[in-house]
Image (cartoon, rainbow, N blue to C red):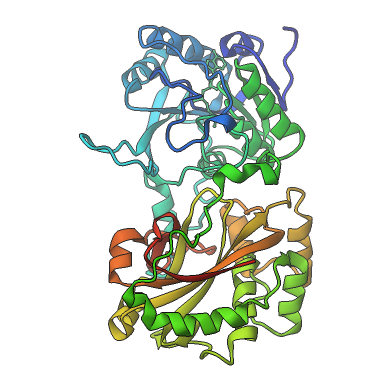
Length: 496
Ligand SMILES: C[S@@+](CC[C@H](N)C(=O)[O-])C[C@H]1O[C@@H](n2cnc3c(N)ncnc32)[C@H](O)[C@@H]1O
């Protein structure tokens, strides 16, 4: 290969590719080499739908792993600048090979970071692996680049007074994996949040970032988004093409046709499943009254129209990014005020949306998302309300969401309507957190009425812990309900 350019990726073996890069050129290497664990890309494992997982992941055998590691790392050492660093991810299986190669080649180890993620599948006879190792190493510790306040300044504090700066600097990083339901994807992928954190601490704009093992191209894509230069290699053609398409089209996610993503849809509740047990009768009559009123709400909710309607009516939440849930609240307020009390009872600062026999919350959920867990109300308030009334209820709008704002026109329109970015948006940008792709419309399919009791919580509720709001502060604990486990809790539903 003749001269190698930057802001490009190459479909080739990385050792061959790196040989075309002159000494002392690269500012930062972030990479996740193959793990030698005999990973079968197309296996329908880990809850992945096999048809959307690209084929051909290139694995290395256990016997050859050390030599292979030494070979590629030697090239990295040569092309890394004196001020440069490398972050290498590794599972525990082959960690020793990586550690020995690092030492042998003369890299200085700075940190041994643990990336803690959730795997989501419980093992029976051993503990669940839920972490990766990440070795942060450099060539020359005196010259090593590091921006300590790029994400939080010294004074940043959480609501509970903890130093956010300190927390962010700890060497155990709790970052969720990304599940891209309904999209094309490669089988292993570093979350953008993880790559971003590394880039923010260990590089500056226009620095050259290398990933020798691109896979889906995460490192290159995030580098591009943070105004860094990038270069990388991927030996499997399909992955290379996938990464290239993302980079060329400036798309974080490549979607398959929205209508074809039915395999990922949450199944609607159906009458075959519905059993109206005796306990249900307590609420059934009032539920039917509520349902009768809700039959008149619109089926197709367009983002712009919905936001404009809320604004016109002075509904206080029209500025919220997650407009669908708020629009449903708005519609419930409009249609249900004659059949129930709105808002419902208050527990401290936490309020239920309505009251009729029991406290009710109004929620909307996208059937076509990766997770069918839904965040309900504050856990302490829910427990108290169940104690007071025997149950709390959930009026749940289920529909198909269109996420079609890759060029961010809807987001920009919403921001302009609000008169610029919100305080939370500004803080998010400062923290370098990813901005979510906006939902542009909602096609309502069903409104269900769900009764939550202590038993429901035992069966399918868990508490959402350790979450942060857009300002980076910890949130209060909330009830997390798994909709795929709802069965007897369903009181009634109407279809659209
Ligand atoms: C663990 S994956 C990387 C995943 C990536 N970090 C992401 O976020 O999508 C390792 C990748 O290295 C590729 N690979 C294996 N051997 C290679 C080689 N010699 N040169 C370039 N790529 C290689 C594999 O095909 C695989 O896509």
